[in-house]
Length: 247
Image (cartoon, rainbow, N blue to C red; front, side):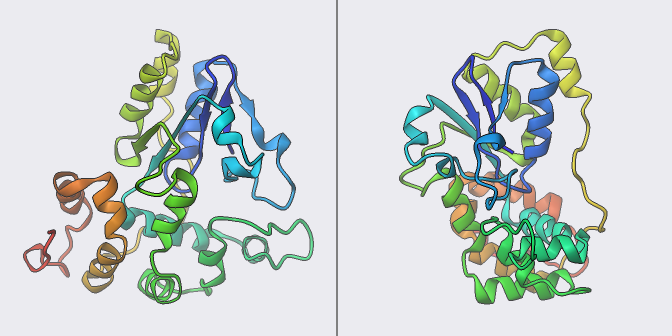
């Protein structure tokens, strides 16, 4: 669900599964004046994750400042799989655009829901997504942020440093936060973590995701950051990091 801070002409673009619900809660906890732009949105678009362009074509020019967050492709794929695995049959039908009432004709994870079958493992789902929708996550990022050489978002933080980057964004856009507001934000903890357990790492699937989504990794993380998240995320008995060329 988009958040707009009219006093600072600042818009938060919410890419799903990147910590956006925490950002929404942080804005609410800050005590700042904000608007939920969902009220201006057509019913056929998923309320929480509409693109800024869904409101009006020239919105990118009308709003002075915009910020968003991205996530490393590995935890992103895992988070989306957990998300679709957590859904009830009725909710999945809505995500797929097949529900007979209140159907969303546009949702960024519609394809993810369409390709998921009950009981499907992460490896099965992830490989199916990469077979049918090459560069799937790269395409999502481009929709929300613009292409590599044409970004229309002024500040792009990282989910992996969510709290620090949120405060950095507020500082950059000169949004004052009282000590009380900062304490309230620090006290939030995790938001929207989901119920399904994280999948075990499979070296073949991991390597394929990293190769497929290389553009996002190079664009937002770079070699040093990627190595750090490698160390955090890929510490499994089935994976030998020496066999992977991080290039």
